[in-house]
Image (cartoon, rainbow, N blue to C red; front, side, top):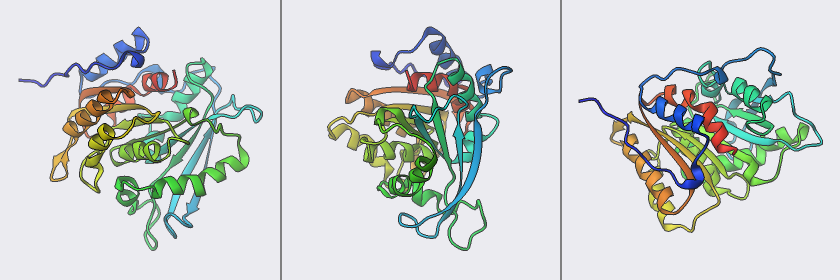
Length: 290
């Protein structure tokens, strides 16, 4: 008997347009939903710039090097501080499926999301490892500590702010990631809601890799924080000694609902991959920045 998507009601504040609702529902019903036109470059749409730099850690992860990319939309004006979105696992979101720069170009040009600078950050390479070996990924992303937050705030954001005006309003700052990068995105807002209050987690690893399974309980027992969170889960996600990713994301969504968070949970037919998250990424951005 095939698995079907379970209806998960979101709070009234989470409702978006009827078009977005239809797109979310359709994508949840198939294992490999197709990408829409908002996920590819469109003629006549101004394109932002994408530059890269390599950073070597100083304090949070000393000697750990990583590649980073900075997307600046064509509509950016120095006199008007931009919103900010930080992406973990940079190459996932720069790939042809998510294609985040093209999504930003299309939505910003139509006024469907604010002018937003994107900081794409790769996991670190341990000293002595080859570039892009990503050996420090789990330590950075799965640890329920403030270390990654310190890397961003103390080392990476100053590089961006040296050349660009970024809004200080935490409602104008978001973080997103997949798998371990997803729990990292939530951890960033949980640790620093004074700086980041928007979260997107794709098949997030809210499991016991490095203690992340504690989050549903922490959410239930802690006074609500001003976080808006989007979670995407999958019926055929991982199930191993660290836990069940499907159940963990259900549990996380239930905890957010219990505490009255502004959140959305979309549970589809896919696996531990990027297909569902990429297909609904444009609608996710509209919902996140509404």
